Length: 132
Image (tube, rainbow, N blue to C red; front, side, top):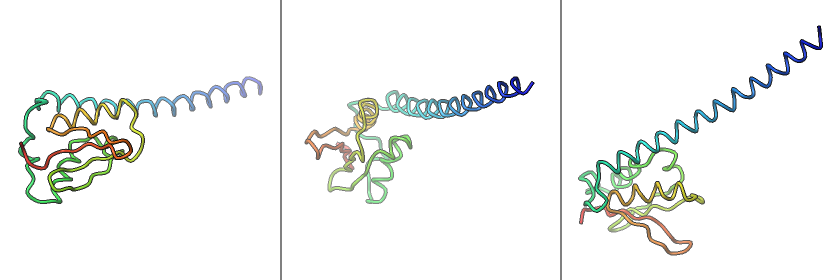
């Protein structure tokens, strides 16, 4: 009888471990879904070669960075630092992005008239503060 009880307890522990793992996967899938939705919206609502939308024609400095940050899902925003320059908001990665995150970020930046500047360790994205 106690041998069966041990087996049941072991199985219960394994099921609990699987539930924790599945919850983690579910959370990851939720974040991926949110990122994909924001990418889809930005691709369908903003032509790639169009000038930046009106909210990016910035008048004050504090709003420039905040407006641009709002374009990114939270998971991507946390990977980036934002800096105010004369004509642009410069977006730099805080860590290695990987090809998937880089692609998502580049798509969002291009969607609002920005670009990627390849400069070795000083590489960055930049988004113009005023429309072309």
